Amino acid sequence: MSLPPCPKCNSEFVYQDQELLICPECAHEWNPSEAPAEDEAPTAKDSNGTLLQDGDKVTFIKDLKVKGSSQVLKIGTKAVIRRIVEGKDHQLDCKVDGAGEMMITAQFVKKA
Ligand SMILES: [Zn+2]
Image 1: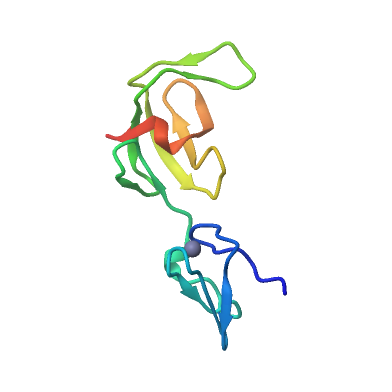
Image 2: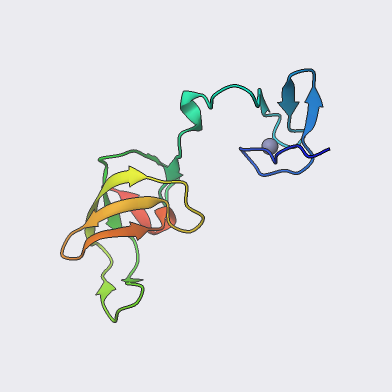
């Protein structure tokens, strides 16, 4: 038995019921042979829990260090979301004012 983990909550206790896979923890049901539905697209929420979308303008709610440099992006810096990605730490592919393109953690911004 090697069922995939739940795509919603990553639970490992998924079980099979005929052609459906069912997660006992979040009650998500899905058909593994079907293409992912529209709502399976990566989503990200800002610090207020607001759902973010491609093209949204956001501002930083804290100073963020730029990885691999001494640059710090100050709180209040504006950015535009180019794309939301399935990232463990960084869900937002952003164009940041004065800093160019970079990956940002959704929890560190709020929708402008
Ligand atoms: Zn689940």
